[in-house]
Length: 91
Image (cartoon, rainbow, N blue to C red; front, top):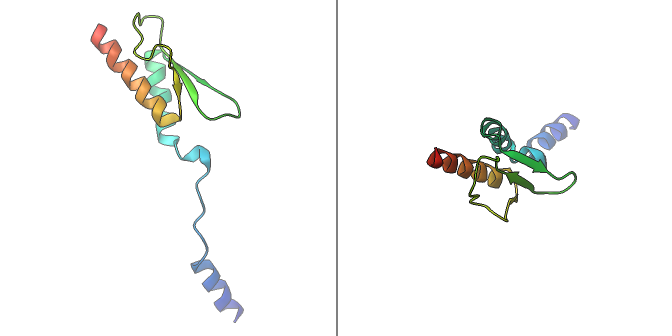
């Protein structure tokens, strides 16, 4: 009976939830790689959600002027990609 109980318990065990840091892992890695090549600074806040994405000094006109805050790493990736496209246009 114990064996049956163990087997049934393992079958109906709830799926472990992902840790909060793992939800945006792919976006975080891609953002950091792209930001390093473009020299875009990413400022994280310790113990808080969100981050700031700052352009390089070479950009004269900032498409996100006055609003550098990103909600999460996916949002930050979109901003870094926008800086990448913007830098490609001005070259």
